[in-house]
Amino acid sequence: MVSITAASNKTYKFIKSLSMKKARCEYGCFIVEGIKSVYEALLSDVIVDMLLISEGALSKCSHIIKLSEQKNIQVYSISDSLFSSACDTKTPEGVLCVARMYKSDKIDYKNGLYLYCDNLSDPGNAGTLIRCADAVGASGVFFSKGSVDIYNPKTVRATMGSLFHLPVYDGVDENILLDMKNQKFSVYAGALTDSALDYKEVAYPENTVIIVGNEANGVSDSVMNMIDRAVIIPILGRAESLNASVAGSILMYEWRRNN
Image (cartoon, rainbow, N blue to C red; front, side, top):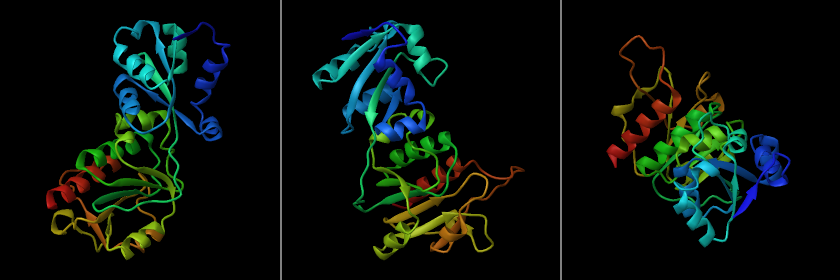
């Protein structure tokens, strides 16, 4: 274990830089914060380059240190104050790791459910949807071009480790929906249209794509032209609409209930 004692340390400055998207794209790395999420990253196939632990968290993170050392991952210790300055959270748990982004030019389709997020903008919604997709046993999650950065610290944190449990692709062209239709996937969008059916009145085949749109503008017109069916979740009270992650989660669990 190597000790970092100053904010001028090159490794420390590198870790802090990853809070910015520009640096994440330049280095192809991102930050994973928190005991559970870091542990899930270490258990997964993702490449972890280094581990940073605050002095106050050394005892409660012994299992993480041990696993990191078994995988020949460099472990750094640091003062609690310097650690807090490197974190995105107000009350950090004292551990983070630097992991490499997963990039693949090829998508291997599997049977089951896929979630397609169309211009989703909120990192918390993105992370929650990834977590729910994991919970229902989905085969993968796609984020369109123009959607939130899936490696944003808030998104990664909101997934609670689910980012490492199933394939998640970002910058995916909407034409993938046509490819999936050609492979006999049914494509449904949660949308407020006159032709939308109650989400419980629709049969969800095993191979289904569920589309969640932008929080303010919904599913884009170009994507709506590709769908098989628009579905709607009835609102019985006075709320104007449902949160995007809530609506997407309801639709994913309806798919699971059907299968």
